[in-house]
Amino acid sequence: QALLDLFTILEELGLLDQSIGLLNQTKTEKISASERSEGKQQQQPLVIVLLGDLKHGRTVHSLAKLLSRCAVGINASAITLKYCSPPGLEMPPSVVEYVTEQGGVTQEVVSGDDLKTVVQDANVLYVTRIQKERFESVEEYEKVKGKYVVNAELLTHAPQTIPGTPNKNSFVVMHPLPRVDEISTDIDQDPRAAYFRQMENGMFVRMALLALVLGKA
Image 1 (cartoon, rainbow, N blue to C red):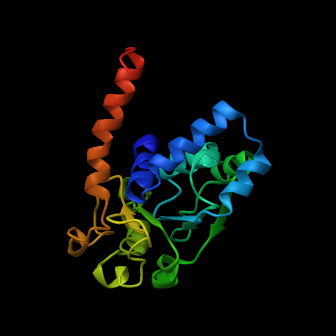
Image 2 (spheres, rainbow, N blue to C red; image 1 turned 90 degrees about the vertical axis):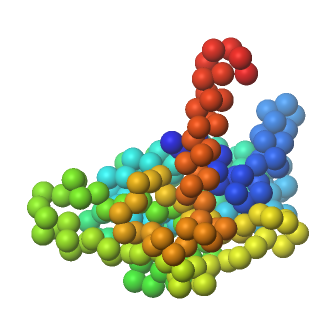
């Protein structure tokens, strides 16, 4: 899941080709960390907001870890992970500690009281459902159910396009699916709603992994 999520992020934001080139250059020319940092100063920062049940959401755990491991190969001047969750469903300390140890990614905890502000400078809004089966009682679940809803009105406050990058978004909404009520169907036709393309990318990434394992790549 983390691999297809990372692929989707880079593809949707128009960063895939440049990131592959940067990673290959790093491998072949053995560029130092300072040289990589110097080159990235001319690039744009990448801000990824993880929203929802961050405590139990395995997809956000693996994505945060993968981003920290691959930060050097991503064509961005800086990568920031912003964690936004209901009380009691925060990102586990073990994941935060892992990302910190890898370096290359800044982490922030942000309040979801005003999602309009949260999305203003975001490039990716990665949403996860509140998992009812994880709660000890229905009452506990009802307290946080529907806490955050991503809808058309919210997206009016999000970025639209990347200057100089035709047909690419500067902001996308992602979700590992299935959803419950955290993403309204009124944004399904918005070009920034990437979750169906994200699902399709899962097939391509799995095909690539099978080809690699079988020696066909």
